[in-house]
Figure 1 (cartoon, one colour):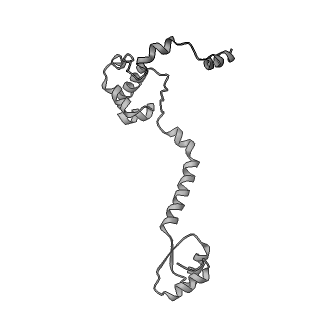
Figure 2 (tube, one colour; figure 1 turned 90 degrees about the horizontal axis):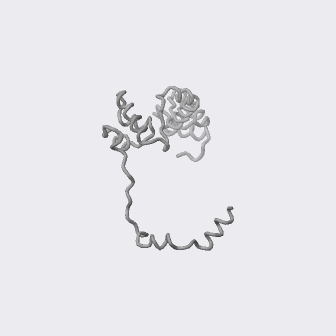
Figure 3 (cartoon, one colour; figure 1 turned 180 degrees about the vertical axis):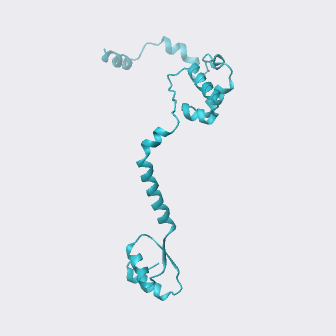
Length: 164
């Protein structure tokens, strides 16, 4: 490590260390000048971090510049929202599978979890996916009748009456 970032400091250090063939450095113009003055024919190369950093910046600019093009070039995604029924989802999955689309790609195109797509793909007809809601026992069960029969609290009445 040099004491400072001046071109003269690098020039002095390079003169004291003959045999240097490649100077690996950051983008500092002071270091570029110091290397050029001390060893006019030396190869100068960016260090690994600065090389990757510069590459990432250039790649990011390219992505931003072409983001609209890429959005149009990709496959059209058919997204299903929660309002879609089980029947519509089953048909959407099986339509894609019939076209030869793989399970993972179906998942991506329909914006569904892969396991959901697998479940729909395994079922030959959509009616087998429909299940009636099942009640599960919980800790409130022993008190449910009491809670239903109980009159509403005054706080609840004041909240509901102020909205009228």
